[in-house]
Length: 480
Ligand SMILES: *[C@@H]1O[C@H](CO)[C@@H](O)[C@H](O)[C@H]1NC(C)=O
Ligand SMILES: *[C@@H]1O[C@H](CO)[C@@H](O)[C@H](O)[C@H]1NC(C)=O
Ligand SMILES: *[C@@H]1O[C@H](CO)[C@@H](O)[C@H](O)[C@H]1NC(C)=O
Image (cartoon, rainbow, N blue to C red; front, side):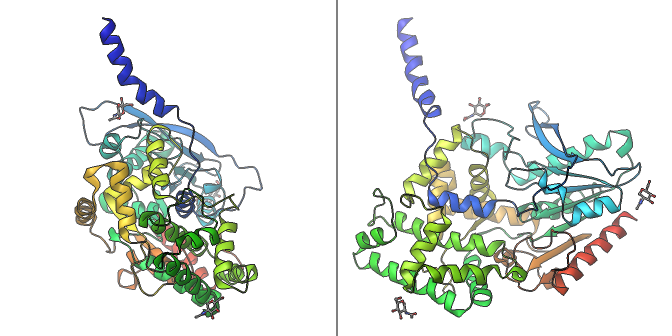
């Protein structure tokens, strides 16, 4: 008896120990990825909005009749404008934590008002407070975290709402941004009768392992909107640091970049991670830049103002964007440890999306293009190594390639879908895996990611305004 007890304790102890580990410091690399995956910026709420939180009971497995397990999915809903028979407008939540701001302003909120409709946003499973199951082990994620389950959840939210008498005749329009625009597209494709139409802002549609075009467009945005000088600072400084590492002077690079002491200058994975973090820091700014605000021009003057010396300027700029940490923490193993920790200690976002990139989409933003200023030192292997080290041997690079092929076979990649309105920014790095002119997409010159979510405004470019008017007309037609 005693023996068994000791054995059981021995088995339980390591698990309990992991769960109670203190939260590790978030490595700069993870922080830069989290910033890239945040939802689009929204206007702060200035007036009272009557957004309510509701919980919708969802099946853990929408495709297994024998699995009766359920969980509670969060939606935020504003029914203030609703009159009987009016439509429902849904802003689909993506790989982020939903907030009342998401439905408080912007063109969709304006249209909801105009059509006397209800507006809501849905939280995607495994993000924010909508967690179907814990821990987020590879086994649990591989069964329950995928876009098909998430689309079925949205269908169920609509079904539950339409059980209320007042909504029984309501038509449903959805909008998405980025991955949630992918969902908006595929929802119309898989469940054409559930919604009348979708507005897909910046939807990536083609799964791809080596997404080398991403950083190319980021570089192009800096060149076009910041100026050649700005592109050259980044390019020049990157080559300088690459050469230091290459020539065995990594210790000097480490000092000049203020990397933490545990950074191993001779470890290529640590190097990859640093260069990738730098690229992400610049990509974060480009992803939601507004040409009408001259965002990139301004950031480029800040970059220059740090120093006339290109490599000092880059090092300081990156530290500024990272919030001036005591030292820049970008060890490869630190990132892996953080993800392993967050399997047991849920951190709101991050891990679940990383899993979807490893299992469904790829979209790993590598240094594989020669036409970008971020160097050559973050191959796609950086990302596939993380997949394998965090999720195990079912997620090696070869296996990820096979999984991504399946996604494209299941959803058809880049193609037009009836009653889906695609918009793209001309300088949005994501547009390279999305619908183009051939699929009827509207391209807004110089614009970035999800640039058309806001209300029609005097500062809109002519093309942006025209696109907003077009989607307003289309939605009116779908609802007619
Ligand atoms: C919205 O509701 C108001 C008041 O009930 C009504 O006058 C108006 O025609 C409605 N508009 C639409 C587009 O249904
Ligand atoms: C999956 O989640 C369930 C329910 O919380 C848990 O009991 C189980 O241990 C998890 N599976 C793994 C392999 O972690
Ligand atoms: C790169 O930067 C260094 C130091 O700031 C400068 O001397 C050099 O001219 C630059 N090279 C290019 C190609 O811009």
